[in-house]
Image (cartoon, rainbow, N blue to C red):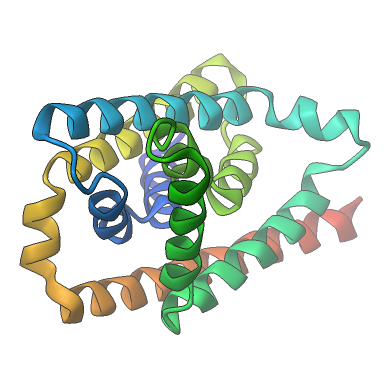
Length: 209
């Protein structure tokens, strides 16, 4: 049975890598011209797809790694470095620019028809950072109870993201440019600390092996 500290740390990690407040303005941009009902439909579909993908890696992440002959400690180091890079982008506000470029490509190619799947679900919700974090966390949530707890944590993060999508206009207006900048940097610092911990745990496990 995972401890409350493990569950809380997992929730923070998932939430920071998904970054719901940072997705709010992108959601508004992608759904420009849609009415409230259409936006709700896009938000629900994107959230469901994102949850299913992250839940898959939570339940079968170790098995997927074993197919490629990758050990969990090695993935901890690699995933931690990736998360640190994402944190670096967040602190220096480069992540938002990259996400906006992904959104622009999707609008050009799919013309809003499949934006719930791409780029909202992939890669904005279930991107490389969130997937890496999920696989890393799966190593600490062992057994049926642990896996169920991790899936519940992911569900909580996705539900919060869905709520942010529904309230995107209010959230974006409330935070403003300055608020988004401060929040993104704060989340980036937290993610950087978590990433360093992942790398340290991975190196320790590799040396022990």
